[in-house]
Image 1 (tube, rainbow, N blue to C red):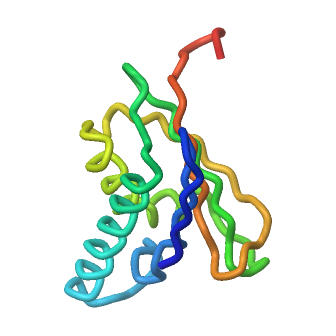
Image 2 (cartoon, rainbow, N blue to C red):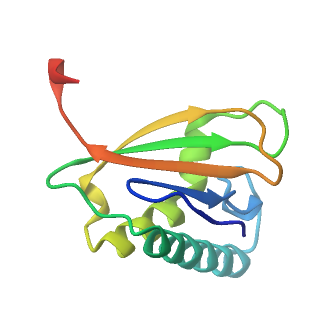
Amino acid sequence: MKMEQKGGNQVLLGWPPKVLSPNARTHWAARSRAAKAYRYSCFMAAKLAGLVAPAGRILLQLEFLPPTARRRDDDNLLASFKAGRDGLADALGIDDSLFVSQVQIGEVHPGGAVRVTLSPFQSGAQQ
């Protein structure tokens, strides 16, 4: 899986494996192996990027950069990224319930990627 260090509060992660899609009809063992590998991949990328958790709730901005121009549902992309989200929380040493997710679908990226940006979450009209 492709990972790049972006520094600060941003990291570029590999595209989630197809078997992690809620629409995939895969044996549970294959799905489990893929989820474990993707979680570890995202954990390592976050550690190498030096990500630091802001205090309090965290706005987790996810920009999915798909490998092809095929249309995708943002809710399925977020579900596919569950193991990646857990890996980020592991790397930051936090409970993933502190994340407030914001999902966008960006331009096509060779092989696909997920650009993650962390920032303090501000609720209500303060955003």
